[in-house]
Structure formats: structure tokens, C-alpha cells
Amino acid sequence: MVENDEYAAFLRRAIRAYSRRVAAGDIEAVGDMTALADEIDTAIQDAISHLRGHGYSWADIALRLHITRQAAQQRWGSPTSGEPDSAA
Image (tube, rainbow, N blue to C red; front, side):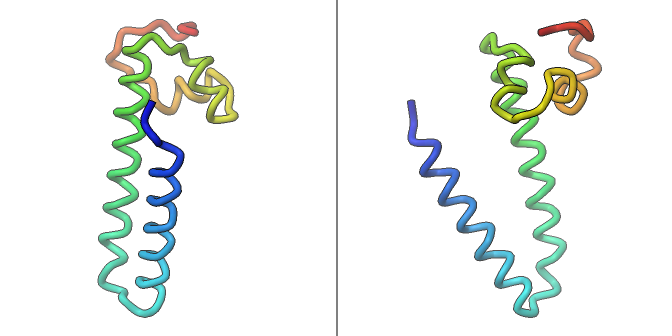
């Protein structure tokens, strides 16, 4: 197991620092911030897809996200994956 907790904490600090720098008047960087948010969304989608590929269920994933299985599947399930709607 890698030290993901520490890495995530580092990334949260970096993102908050970036926000403060932009808020201090760097309006040009707002576009870069939204592009970063898009990359984070894509990374989450990739991570969840790979977790599913490793055998984790929608219920397993939803539990960690404090949402329902259905909500997780609706948000990150691929309409082209061929998975039935009731996949657990």
C-alpha cells in the first residue's frame, strides 16, 4: 500500500495555495484552475474505472464516498460499459 493519505494531503495543500495565488489577483489563471478541475474529474473517473476492473463493486466505492451505490454508478458508470443497471 502506498502512502496515499499523505499524498492527498499534499495535493489539498497545493490546491489551496494555488487558489490563494489566483485570488490575490491573477485573473488569467482562472482558466487554468478550471482546466485543473476537469483533469481531477477525469482522474477520478479513471481511478473508479480501474477499481471496478480490480473487482470492487459500486457498493464498495459508494461506501467510501458516503453516497449510495446508485449515485456512484450514475455519476461514474460508463453508459458504454455494458454493465447492467443493477450491478452491485
